[in-house]
Image 1 (cartoon, helix red, strand yellow):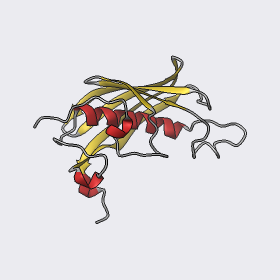
Image 2 (cartoon, helix red, strand yellow):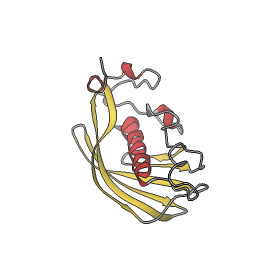
Image 3 (cartoon, rainbow, N blue to C red):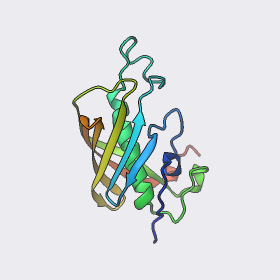
Length: 163
């Protein structure tokens, strides 16, 4: 089967995530085994309000999500098993792309605060069938703030639905 392949700078063209949960503001580059994306921490994100009052910090769990969404863009762009992908109608798609199945490790080396631009560089290390092993670095102004390793999989969309 010919994989779906296109290049766009909009994360909405690759992911089902939407505001307020879509974290990728811009796709910087997409290659066969690497994707780079960024997001600006505004301080208006719903999850920052309580994390922490008077000392707003972008949560580490959301950094993991940023790297996961970025990896999902690579899967959708280069390793999508469907001939067509429809972000407007998720029920149209046979597969749910990039479902998190494992976090091997996450190491945090700094904080992200309002005004910072997070740059996620995600590398595909290995693909076995529908399982993708990734490593990621998240930086602010070229200073490493997080390093992680995780796995995503493509699963049948019917497994996620309630019907």
